[in-house]
Amino acid sequence: MYTAAGPRMIIAIGVLALSLAAFTPTVTWAAEPVKQEKKVKKPAKAPASAPAPKSPAPKATAPQVAAPKFATAETAGNAPFCFGEAPNLDKLTPDEGEAGDKVTITGTNFGEADCLRGVSFGPGHPAQFQQTNESITTTVPSGGKKGLVLLTVTTASGENSRPFLVK
Image: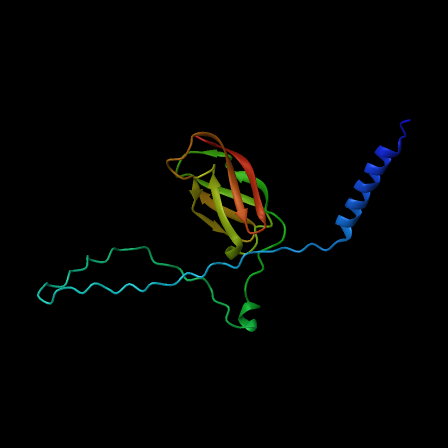
């Protein structure tokens, strides 16, 4: 005669195994990393009779602007606080223009001048800008896409965009 004890026994063993697995601490074994020996290469010696190679003339580079260094807690406290709300663009004056035209962006939450990351007319088309407390003045860049683009203002707290027509 067949009884139903068989499936119940399997279920009971499965539940027991799951409960043991849940309460048993797991141990992770990891192999120790292989230490590699450092091989020191000796510099090649140039023959004494060969003239020293001439170095090329230094290339002119753009001046590097050093980021402010905050060596102490007192000077770190003078750093601008850049995080807060994302910028809000209220109005673009004008809302259309050609390359070289000036555009004034009015709005709120632009933050300090050090916190404004950039202004762009579509992806990959950054623009030069000047910021005041309540507005940003920028110039439509040349070589960008013509047509409807998103003029985007990016700060440390986020970004916001408005449509702009480039003629």
